Image 1 (cartoon, rainbow, N blue to C red):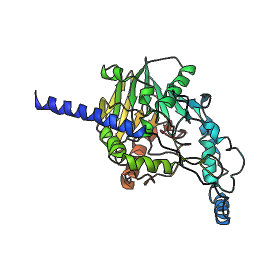
Image 2 (image 1 turned 60 degrees about the vertical axis):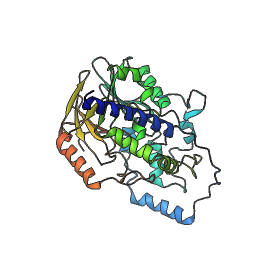
Image 3 (image 1 turned 30 degrees about the vertical axis):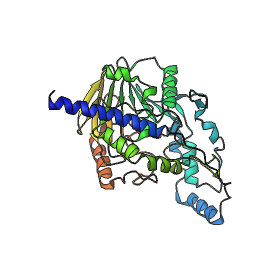
Image 4 (image 1 turned 90 degrees about the vertical axis):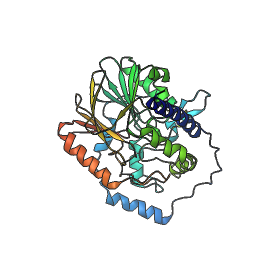
Length: 366
């Protein structure tokens, strides 16, 4: 057997082993610990939160209009797993309303929590749709000539399937012909088997497209450091806190993480350089590599036919997260700003909408 064949076979076997181990680690059950009763806000916290109202432009409500723009419909809550347990339930956030922030919550967080409650299927422009608010991340659906291209598949299969079913309630039912992973964080690929079948990938019927280094980085973060990372993630997102004014309110990028079935299908096609183009089912795409920005393996996607730039997770409606409490690799601020500067100089004059894999789009040139 030629050496190249042996090497490729070894890589495939390693990928299968990594995926199996990764799936086992990320679907492990975490026991709910005892939770202390939350305390009222201290005088210092109340004063600090009140000061924020004077520091930020709360009168600007453009984000609230943008977050609702293109809304088509949503799904009943909760979304359940096969065993009947809850995977996702926005009803737990019914305490969030249009009134002023409780004194225990930073007004900026309260504003973000209200925005992140928008959920369901949204139209960005002709042939470009997004599922938002069914997990921490978004799922973007691009309509090809005959089928669908899905960009990122959420964290778990249950919410990914619910999102795709929601799309089919409002749009013609088409086969998924390609899945694109924008980067190597689990909330963007874990639901993949909720929208495609691995047999179709193996047969070549469906492509799985990812940036160079995707599988290695997904493995390194979630397997090599998996046990510690998983535990820290639970603390980072307040998974064990009850929802409420003195508990878990929001996660900034979204409400929280779904609690369902995690999966991964290794990529079949790798994007390796900026400016690389690919056409899938009549949809033209141009890629910009963004390694070591928000994730070690990441890329942006420009859709020239639709004048849409998918900025992945490099420009969301939060501050740039250079460091995470769960202990992910520290992001390179210099590479990050250079990536954004390149995107602005390359695409912004020919872009009508910038979408991201969290939050709502930005329309226009400013």
